[in-house]
Length: 221
Image (cartoon, rainbow, N blue to C red):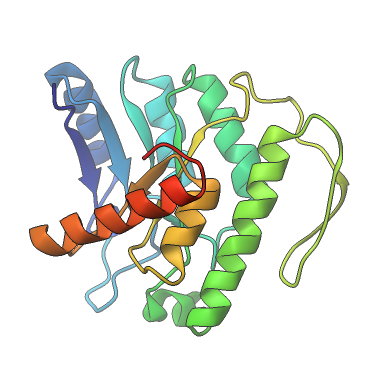
């Protein structure tokens, strides 16, 4: 049986009336999930309404019973991973375990320039994502205080309270298809993988590569 979810580009004119209607109709029509992008604005003008991601997902969590949901994906280039872990745990609890935390490195230059964030080069983006994943994973999984000394993030005896009702909190999804950078992070941290804009043959090849990497790491594809 195939489960079909919806993904909404939130920066393309998403408002409260539209989001409320989407949530209600996705639930009523039997879709498995409702996911959305996380951007301040478009990569190119014109700028359009872009309802804030966490606030909109909080509404969904409280106004649906079945839908799985989450960001597809939240860029750690402008989302603080410590706060994201805290928000995701709370949303997962509120929804009785329906949150999927989609994470990515960030890619859109324009929104970072407009709002004063440093996107960085590929190495910077991916090393920052790796640190963010480590921080988020530790905070969600550890009942003991967490200390972490990284280049981008530091924790000094931090504990998320209340602890997630679901052991380990929400599942982690990683967006990105690069064999050098993204797939090793999927193998290490994620239970779900998302990649876009690949032709069917290219996707099949990339998925097979990921399967081999998972098997080599002792994980089931």
